Length: 434
Image (cartoon, rainbow, N blue to C red):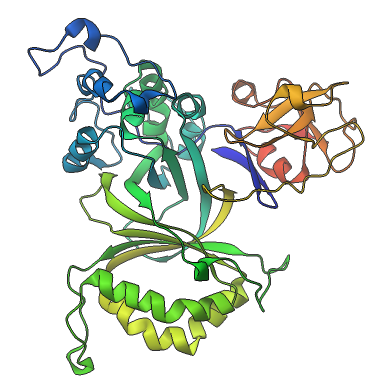
């Protein structure tokens, strides 16, 4: 479970665990189905580095360790066709894994160990951030689902998106022995998941944010709508409409083109769109597109639903869709490539809040730690603070749960902004902040 702050355009994560990223599909066996393979190489895990995508020949070393059918997770089925597509094009990238996650009420460990952890708490012990960072991958979106609007087979808890540099790097990570050992907590905590291999769709000028007549307030905040769509092969219009034959994709694109200018005028903007290549993990249902819309407020969303232009075009949407999950979400991290993050963190007199990339960017005199999110930006903080020592609006967070301390990006204690306080003081982390 990542603990995140979103200040202006800057998203900073304090990783206490993380639901993002699929489980391993290998048992670490040295056995290979290729009799001519060099088994001495097959025994060695591929080192996790950021230059894997320039080593296409290394896919053979990974291929011997990725063994479909071994270690299949309890929470979904691995799509063998999608697996083979990725193995066949190992250095093409980047690509994006869109994760829908539903947690168990109570953790259930595969080895039968007794535990009183909830599914979310068990999953909080699964924290692959160092593995992602090692291969140049990063989490670019994470949100909790506040309301599921469409789709009732599974009620999802979280939505997360991970950017991977290429399939080879991804397979090297999930076949790494240390990653495999860590993943037992994900298997214990997650009841079901979709992991969709996707590619980012280019944005049009109309999809940029605009001022809204329904601007967010403290009582009516902005939120995201996440749509995961299965489009029909052939659009299904009522016979009396006399519409020409169209594919589901063509009908959806028509709805989009007819309605989005009206949405934009209300302040609705597109956070991102993804074309789904295939399911890496799922339930054998096919998916085609993922759309994340930012709604300026609930009142703006209601105005969008009642908009005459949208309603007039809606029959194209209904003709296009075979099935859809639609979820209202509260995003904790939004850091899509091509964004222009700008920090509006307060910078105190002692230098806490100073933008940084490295510890050496910090001003010193106790303010020596740069907390970053795995991307290109961060802020300086004071480690080993005492209660009441932090300046401005920052609070000193300390006395965190023992298991969480090894996962926090600071040692002992640190001055942190107000937006980070609530998740830090909640189980399973349970720091004291004052």
